[in-house]
Image (cartoon, rainbow, N blue to C red):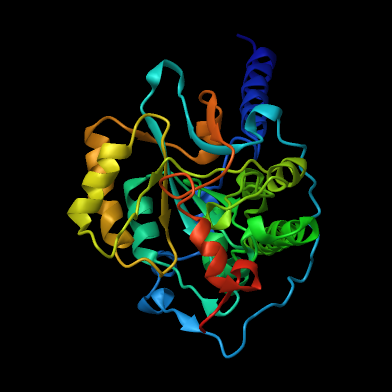
Length: 341
């Protein structure tokens, strides 16, 4: 082979390689190991005991984010995904499941961050989706950006202050969602600035520029909620297994058994990664190995939604239809403020 042809050959290989890398868009990636480990040292990612601290604020925090409207407008949700999604029917019965963790925080509180859960998932290379409240992201910006930058994790919208959307009119619903989308974008821009300063801005190509799934706080919706959220481009992703069901009454072993009896291919499991539940950080490392033994593969919610038709219900619930109606009477402020502070 002549020198000219050899040079052309290596040029084409390099070009194809570059194009291959560019072809991987934020639509099918969730972060970058290089970005994550350039911006944070291992001990920073591991966290500290202070991360799990919870607090009641002197006054409820009802402040708006710095930007109240997101810059990115998502296309409407397709008709087949406009109801409440509980699970997916994967093609060929593929044994895939989505572990999901809510990061919610109502107006009167700081809800914390359960570092042990995230550390375990990272160490075991287990994919997961985190449904983050906008206020939680503002209260925990560094932790939120770590999750955003991690290629194992997807972030979804969980409303601003965990508002009960079933009790809200359309402007209130849109505010809960828009503020959260906008807060995510603000953190994305901060993350991009950090990446640029450290010379890894190109890795931001693999970070989601916006959230494209959401979860209903308390699983509550009403006749108009579905249409509003569909018009905003956010499928309502609930769960088929309430992973922490009756956690105060059940031991970790009992919770593992509960989950294993309920899980099937295409399942979506609900848990929390704030510091509110008391046993989830012990449940996750007990449950994941058992699921692996049964041949399950862990995927993000957006990945799962592409693996088969969705199973939907009209109204969200915890474990049985109607079992979440009681929350309507628990809170003032339409789900964001406790009746008893």
